Image (cartoon, rainbow, N blue to C red):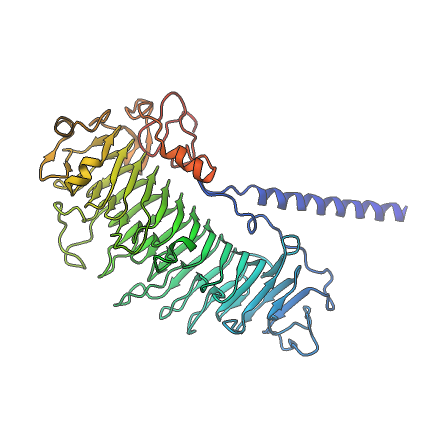
Length: 553
């Protein structure tokens, strides 16, 4: 009878373990990528193996690190265990390593003491805190990583009071398939920190995942000089990089800056995916791309970017002619610019920029006299929901712009601008422009059609000094087909709900724009969605603006 009871207990425990494992796998597999961003091949769904139980002696391949314990030592203690931990992380970690960090860890792993990860897809390296709780281990010095197939998770990187901190990838070596997840980074106000991804000539960083992290207090947002301490910096020879589902805030630089730093390295910095992040109180910019190719900013929420004396607050932006930058389904508010594009300046070779399905509201110029001169509605460089100076072929499709000083501004540049399927209205500035193209050559090549413009007085300036209402614009330019000046009938403006009422004139009146098929042909992903992921169209034709009407709650 006793043996039968023991078998029953064993069976119950086994079933419980299997069930728990099933729940863990189901939760991991429930992750879906932001719209237009592919799932990374490694770094999201993997689950750490359990530590030894009981862990009363050394076990090959399982490291226990705790510098705060008096008994900790590296002498004749290759792995460590809870009652006799190691002091330091070994420099080279073999495939299948499980390393559990505890307490406060003060050892620097900057070059030349970098951590070398020798994992494989079947046997990744794990460097982790036991769980993602308030008791995560704290690392106070910089870590530099190199190698393949490793996951760093559940660690609090706090470099306050230190000269350097955060995590970087060794620029003089290759790294691939490395994930940093469920971590927090807090920097030193006087220094740069966060996560830095870059490689020297001849090397490459690829398939790096930054997932579910908190990065904050990087640099000093109140410094009196230009201190570019970004939360995440992605530089040359970095490709297939994911920054997803994270919160990035309070920094003297941007939330994420992609910047190859030269025309020659533009093609080495590509397929950068930045999605579903919450970015706020960064200085100068939320998310920004310079020389690079195939950068996708999707479903990010960006607000309250900090104005600087030398740089206005920008939710999103680009400069120096990156190629194929896609601004998809982002929500931007409380900035001086929703999207800001600086000049190409001959420093990049890109031409194609896409602004699709975004929501911009409460985009206002700063208080006069603080940093900038008074707002000038006659200057097409001035603040707006979208201001695109750089780029050649620029497509602004299915966005909602409401409650801004100006709508879409384009000072000039080469090529053309296409403005289609947008809702633009609720303009704050009486003399602001809903649409303003600064040069005649640009205006002649550009298109405007299938939009709703609705303010107290619609104002369009199209490559000349004349300011038109919508009817006058159509008559003078023979453009603006299927556009109307009507109330778009949002669900609740006071609560910033810009979805459409059932009787909205924006429903079932737009055409399917080719940019959606362009994206699918290049990346193999369908982005025929609205800002909250509703498939388009729901019935009949597409709807104008960022939201597709649906009867579902």
